[in-house]
Image (cartoon, rainbow, N blue to C red; front, side, top):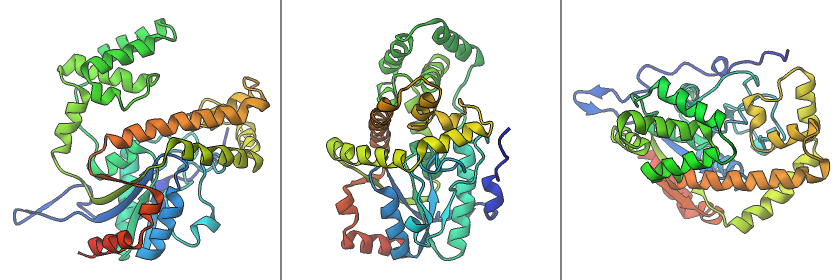
Length: 340
């Protein structure tokens, strides 16, 4: 049995009443807090940019990375070190036990509390990370009331279980036929999202993307200046390859070996994330050491592609190169927007 880690909730102040909704005052919607969001694919330089923004804007960081949340995943998650943070407070970082269940709804609760605490101190909340679902949920809310049918879902999962390697791809093509917008944003081997899309269409006759659109019409939870870093594929690969090798040299394999030695199951969700899954496979004798770095690099580039696809589907996102994101005029305009 692994040790029980602290929950995020213990580390965060309680959100003031009304933070999670937009209350009315004399018929007028109360303005939402303004936040800055720095997003993008893995290895694009999000954290370094966010740290510098926090220094310039007197801000604090709120992590939106579904792997960096966990307390034992340091090297492979590229969790920023204390030195890299340079004294900038960072919330939702390394406070969950590997067995702790976590999802977008819990992230909203924890991030709301963190943002409430930051704004109460007169600081700027800068949300940084690459988990698109978490960011969308925080800024725009989680869609509720979408139809579900456990029977239909069970049938779809049974079809997957009885099928072969081509079954999921075939089902992804079925999603593309009824909801091409959503199909373009999910991976062809993502059973959870493929099943959900087919289930929703079977039950409601409407594509899942249309349900999301109707939810979006309710308005955002926060006013956000949402930046997304873009980088050419070859330039990204030039960052991913040396970063992967440096992580392995720092002891990534030993990090995972220690986790498994402490009794944690190899198939825990955090250990199935990009990079960690390959290291686990290596330790289980399924992937030779000579192929480890190459496989992690391949998986990372594939993951980055899915992240870009996700963020391309988000409305209200400003795409910037890292150079453009560091322009002084842009930071001045951001500062003015925050002070309005």
